[in-house]
Amino acid sequence: MKKIITVAACAAALLQAEVVGVKPVQERSFVQSQYIPDISLVFDASYASRNKDQDELAGIVIPGISEDVFSQGEGDGHGHSHSAYSSNNGFNLNYAELIFSANVDPSFSLDAIFHFTEDEIGIEEAYFTNTTLADGVRIRGGKLLSDFGRLNKQHPHFWDFNEAPLIYEGFLGYNHLNELGVQVQYTLPLDEYVMIGAELFQGQNEKSFGNESIALATTVDSVEIESAPAPSMFVGYLKTSFDIGNTTIMPGVSYVYGQSRLHHDHGGHEVAFDGKSSLYNAEFTIKHYFDSYSFLTWQSEWMHLDREGDEYHAEDPALPIEKEAQRIKQEGYYSQLVYAHDQNIRIGARYESIYKNDYAFIEETLPSKPFKKYTAMAEYHFSEFSRLRLEYIHNNALYKEGAIGFESEDVNTLLLSVNFSIGAHGAHDF
Picture (cartoon, rainbow, N blue to C red):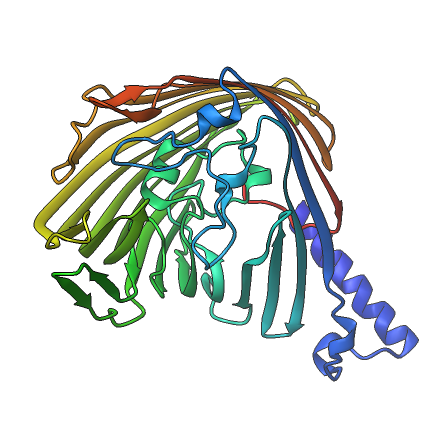
């Protein structure tokens, strides 16, 4: 029935064009000024109450995974940092995003997302998309969020919870996989949705992948490592989707491989790593619709990070630089359940864990128990353009360095957030 209506509508439009003397689209000359961009603005703010004051939150880490969890750093220089989101007790202006989207001409479209915080302005994404290739083929290039996993390509205002899972921030950093490069995807001509994709990126992820030069020096020693050839990161994935009645099932697998040349300064203790990293991901989502607005979604992702190379430590300016072969294996997952009662009310819960943290070269003994985090949320959508969300977060993955090693620092957070959007904003992926 839909095809009949569509064909009939097209036929009527062509007939009307002939009646009024307007040329069909394929016979008209291209006028770029007719392609007016869609413009929208997304605003996000929150109020946070925790069981620790702001001074107590300073220096809290996930040992061997993340440092300064509540830091308000400015990221890696290649984009904004998610680390500032709701990191303050009290009020937080998390971000505003200004979005432009339009067709450039019959062959290309262009999208740009500008990210604003109180302290910085950055380009979240800016990419072109080819629109005239063979059926099922799409090429995209510029600065873009990778299609790795399920959550990575989604902007924070589309997340079901305010904070990214431990595995994303721990293995990919606060910016996740947001890179300069090119993406090629092909949707197979099958009855069910099957898409394969490959991406080639510059390789500037601040957490697990990097290609910049390294220079360490003490009064008695020095280490210099040249930058790696760029692009230096490859991403590949296979994703599928199929329906069983009113239930949609969406599994997928992803893989990242690239150079890892990383250099961090931990309060005068410099650490550098030169090697290669592989990151594996498996995703699985089930979404069941009870009616047009009510649904239940179960979403899970698992990641395994394998990094191998040489690690350098410059701890004392008067001592030689320590070097040791390093093999890091880290593994974790999250699983979440979200129920939409109607178009206004949603509730959800998420459990996450990093249960493997094999990190050989580290002075302190790492905690043997898994890092865990629990979140419960309830939200009210006044419309599709405004949302109020209440969350309770219990995080027992956090520690501080004490006199005899790492000491557990459980943090409980009550978070109230608002999100608004105005203007013409494109639809999000299902």
